[in-house]
Image 1 (tube, rainbow, N blue to C red):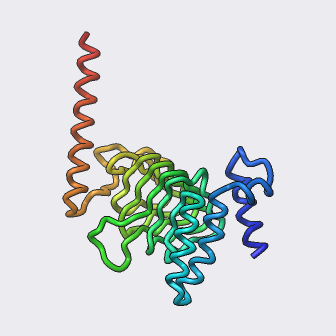
Image 2 (cartoon, rainbow, N blue to C red; image 1 turned 90 degrees about the vertical axis):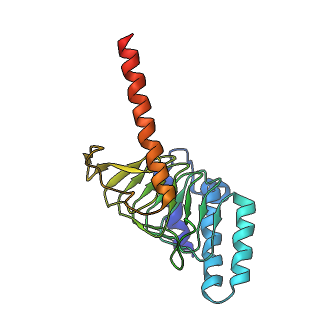
Image 3 (cartoon, helix red, strand yellow; image 1 turned 90 degrees about the horizontal axis):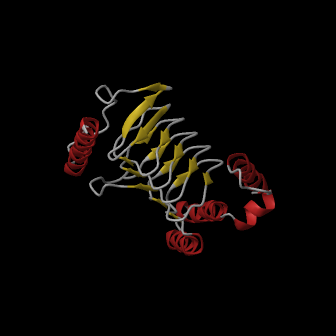
Length: 215
């Protein structure tokens, strides 16, 4: 347990420039408290003590503002910066060295059964307010921009932005909108509606730019 805690504290010190000491992180950072308490809740959940696991989870939510279902699987050195409003669903899986900001949701769409929540790879950054919804994978070393809504798989070493999210970088190279990796090739009507709205916003922005240039 001491080794596990030490590893988490070092990860926070490496990633948070505001962190002044390991003692401060341990005593005052809600992300550390949520992660350590989830470890206990997950043990209870996997050993048949599901009510107790949920009780620990809900108490942690009340204390920290971070809700992690006891069934979720979390890897090593997860860093939760600020943390308020984070929700992680029951079948979510998080790899090692993930950095997550406030307001993130790893949730479901309501149309899946069994595995309903995303799998987050290693060394992934998820910006504040991002929503990752569905039972797909976000590849290793990827970046999800703030307030993005991700509805399907994100390749490794890529950056996803927007509503619905689109890939703008892949392996360090820019991806043109016309040739972007398709993330919305699903029959979900909500996803299709979001894509239509995104295109309409692009058209409106283009018209405004042309009007301003014509003045």
